[in-house]
Length: 381
Ligand SMILES: Cc1ncc(COP(=O)(O)O)c(C=O)c1O
Image 1 (cartoon, helix red, strand yellow):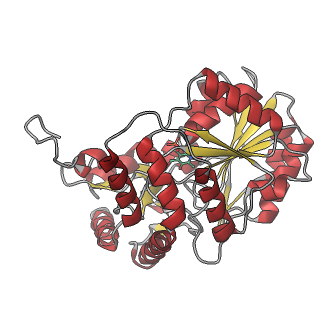
Image 2 (spheres, rainbow, N blue to C red):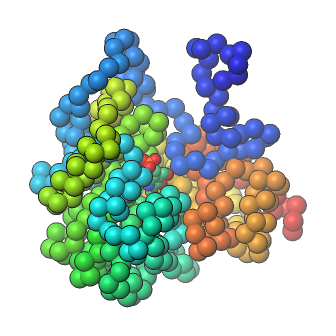
Image 3 (tube, rainbow, N blue to C red):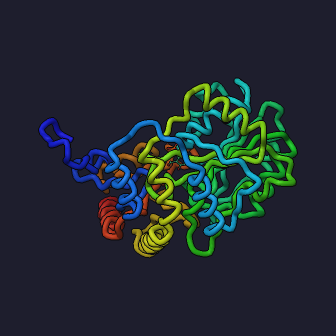
């Protein structure tokens, strides 16, 4: 908002997404479309109450999450604990602090979401790389490497990302069972970041880590919530799911110690409305993502390619045949294509030569992005 703007002016999306100077910004991992009308209505109704003080969190919120999970993924949580956390990053930070020691190794599977590494290193733990393997069959886990890294006595945790940001894999039940077995064998705590769980595309199903963990003797916590599914990162809390009393008690103790327990009254309203009424909107979102992925698959200029997208609304584009250096690719995307994407090296050195584009956006914007890439590739070949 400018200094002269009225208090009632809506905030500028250009400012939020960094879209100045003709740059088309598609780099933030959230839907670039309006939230479900039912959610907006619930927030508006809550705003009209005119009282924004301390509000307790009703039981119905966890129930709304579990009703959603049962209906969308056939996953019931009756034997699991459901804890509240202000953000996924907060949960990861707390779990690392409580279940690993300074100097321990924490396994990441790069290329992977940018926040994981600083959460590990700022806690004075060491990143242990279990890099994903990319071949003409797509991305897969390197389980042999995971076994050898997990076997190191100093390695005490793994941050798993399922579905995986940025490569778009939805890990199968078999892959996840293997991960659970390896981590169970070596006493490695698994933090399963499942914040993109609802965003699986046709023919792909989300497998909760919880469902493969029982029997593997692995300690774990899974991170969920409405923030990515419904575009609510600016208002809603997230959840920590676990079957373990020690995790529950220590997470609650830390939440209490750090006062992470304050409720946002609009967040409470949005959370319940999202899980109770947001199904048709999410179905529409997934159809939009399928359509936009199809456009990228068919119309990206050669030699740029879309990596097989199974889940998330984050498409991973392969620019390697253009043979740019890391900095050159970033400069060319912003300077020549005029596209605000996330260059792949942000996700680890394994991402060099790739870039991530958010495709939960109106199809016209994806067509515009493709046209910009066609122009930019033409200008170099
Ligand atoms: C896999 C993953 N985890 C966590 C987050 C961020 O969650 P939070 O903002 O709640 O820390 C993102 C955001 O893009 C994400 O993609």
